[in-house]
Length: 380
Image 1: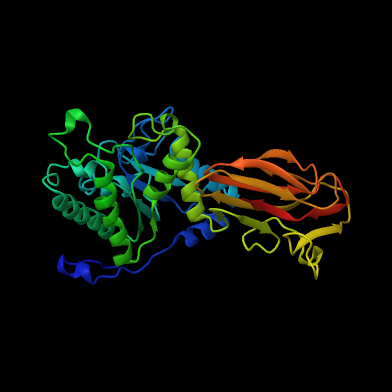
Image 2: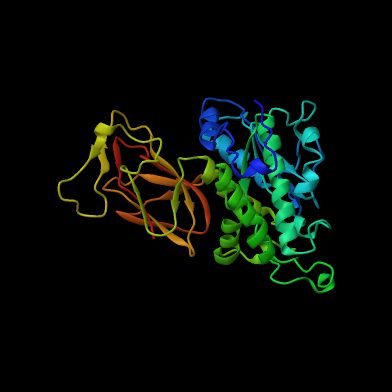
């Protein structure tokens, strides 16, 4: 592959797409490693997470509570694949311009990440304070856009698929008093309206997949029930609970089995993303439904062994907690699990829990019974 766009041709150059998140997902389902890396600053590196160890260029990350590790764990569970990898290539106090100088060392043949297939490109927070860019908003924009373009170019030259993600949201509405004179752009707004907007533009221009992490993490800061102190104690770096949520956001983008619920949501046997379900001929579809469920399972099976009859990943993206309810018929032993925790169903309708922003794995079981009996879930 020969890619060498000149400065002038950036405006018309459309790179060939090498692979997508769905390629990664199907590779993982068949047992492949298919590594994906995330390249960025300290918010990627994991500063402020428990047992954080700062990354070293060319070496594998060892921090246990960063979003990349948590994402890897989730994907391994969902794909039943113990070798898939998510690489952390975050480096504290760095910029996109700095990243250009270490790409070969970080992803070259001698690196722990030499087999990377896709790279998610972050940065934008420290770039506003880069001495070459800090003269004005325009200098910040132009310098940052040029650096990100060059990282994209490098990826394609190495047959690696780049994608873009906006920065983690921070709590810097105004400049810290001691930096007011020296760093006038040290605010959340500058990052979001300049650096993150550059990534939105480049994703559209170059046909790159894009994850608006700033949007989701801003939602988490604004609307989750978890205190800001627990999420981002130093106002800049997410801690453990924030990195867990970021992993869940990324999972929802990479596993296309995920149902996103931002308000009233019904999940039943006509939902297109459910798994671990029943044979089609076990279903009942009444001519005149008597409740919200127009298709359900209520039939006898060959034995009384406990059997899973539905599973589904749900990502809650609502501005308030959603009430999760489960519905069944007459069986007294049907039960559900939510993130592995068993919940009994006490009647035809059971309120299971109040779900905050984030990812949930729902499973339904027959219990020890010859009856398969379940209608569905409602989130509202």
